[in-house]
Amino acid sequence: MDLTTLIIQLVSGLIGGNAAGKAVPNSDLGTLGNTIAGALGGVGGGQLLQALIPALASAAGGAGGLDIGSIIGHVVGGGAGGAVLTVIAGLLKNMMGGQKA
View (spheres, rainbow, N blue to C red):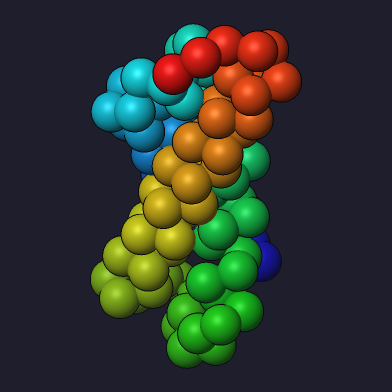
């Protein structure tokens, strides 16, 4: 994993986390919580997608840069991972806090 890939996954994850927090009100952690959960989920989701689809890793390590296909793959993996982790964390927080939906 190189620094460019990590940055792409972090940014797309925090965007996905904030979008998911606003789209699913029961899972909203607030701006800071959505950002942190989204960034962590973005890196995790991006790495998981990279492990499942090895072409993303080989394209990233290729001729000195990223191609458009691998960038899109990292953005999708990071955004989806950030959204999923934010929703899960928000729902767990609500369940533990005794809040009713």
